Image 1 (cartoon, helix red, strand yellow):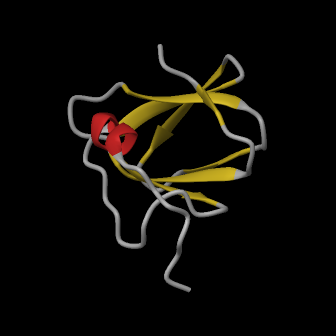
Image 2 (cartoon, helix red, strand yellow; image 1 turned 60 degrees about the horizontal axis):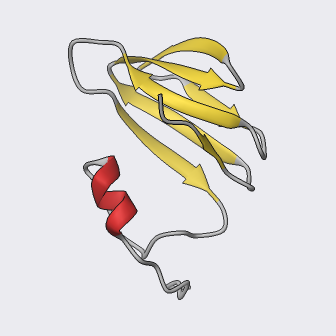
Length: 88
């Protein structure tokens, strides 16, 4: 089970599928239309429990990726190296 802890506020919006969000060990069911706010420093994970793709987007600050970046997999996100320069 992969879990992350980010120093900043983080929010997730679910667009398709069924999943679970684990926040500091507490499991919460999520599906399309749901949103989850993850408080600063909370250990968290997202698990797809459905038979289709779980589609979501993540909102957080400050920027950690170049503008327009899309990561289809966790592996592609790990490979990215952002220089911190934003478009605005």
